[in-house]
Length: 431
Ligand code: EPZ
Image (cartoon, rainbow, N blue to C red):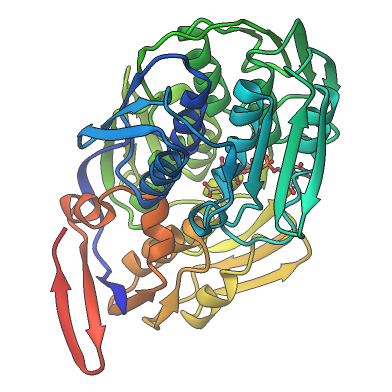
């Protein structure tokens, strides 16, 4: 069994380079299906979710090759099936983008229901509503596979989303990209990765306007040509290191970021007393200047505070004396990890969508597990605060979305390693 072992109690200092955005990459890679020529995608994070979606494309018949650590060559011109129903597909949430991409290109798709992090019910009714509005018939086959089928091409339409959904917005953009006529998506999500997907599709010749606002207009085109495209930096990975620096009262520079994408996080850190200095493509986070103050956060769709940074920020709030309140308004059940913090001595109670944190309680080392990707990152941030040795298990969740997490934290001065446990024996694994 692999674990992370963290000896905490030291502030982080130094620089960290942020990788390409996971949630953009896992949409842009399947989006290449729509292209009529090969593409090269750059600034791809080297994480297991990217390997998984790449292997799924290969199963469909695409030629996917890694050109270097952060670039993929994808030739979709030999895709031979619209059936994506293997175990690999079930293993990741973002496989739902295969529905939009295959439907948009071939007019039909059969995709196994997605897996991914478990924080309560994760419906895809808004995706299906969009496909149906575009003229597809959708049905659930054997309780485990979604089939979407058009009579010919999807046909442009007007869709009003009942909830602001990142996945539904991107999936409908994919399905509408080559449709007949214009599709208007209202109440669309506005996350940076939505703009990135639209920019990628437009660079191939698509006609998408309004991405980043709540009304997106997609005029269908017949042909998409091959491009070389570079993915945006990962907003959440950057936010994670920013929280870690503040939680350990360190001072770090986070490189390869778009500071504007981090506004909702920097505003909160500043409110707490962290000194933030923004540069063109980097940001300095200095928590050495004055004692930090408690604060409240409420997660919201972009440009609100990102739910994917909620557990990491909670780990930071545990270190600050006073009562802080976290309000999770995006997901029904994203507090499963709190019991792990309580095992470390944190004083946190959960009441519905609120987590009430009595910060400043002394934390002690305890074995904890990553209950999902961001919760796993939050366990590292908690462990970095503790004078003692914390073992974090279920690290496969963390590796789904964080590239070289051990090396990046080590470069900031953290004492962290990945070990393989067999009974009483422990062997350190090197990346
Ligand atoms: C994306 O998930 C991200 N995943 C999630 O990041 C992120 O937490 C989420 O957006 C919100 O920002 C990927 O991009 C692969 P949603 P997604 O559709 O698209 C409800 C991470 O840690 N809803 O925006 O699946 C839903 O239940 C992951 O990197 C419906 O009701 O999220 C939720 O309450 C975890 N019906 C809310 O909308 C639908 O059809 C937002 O979900 C779709 C969603």
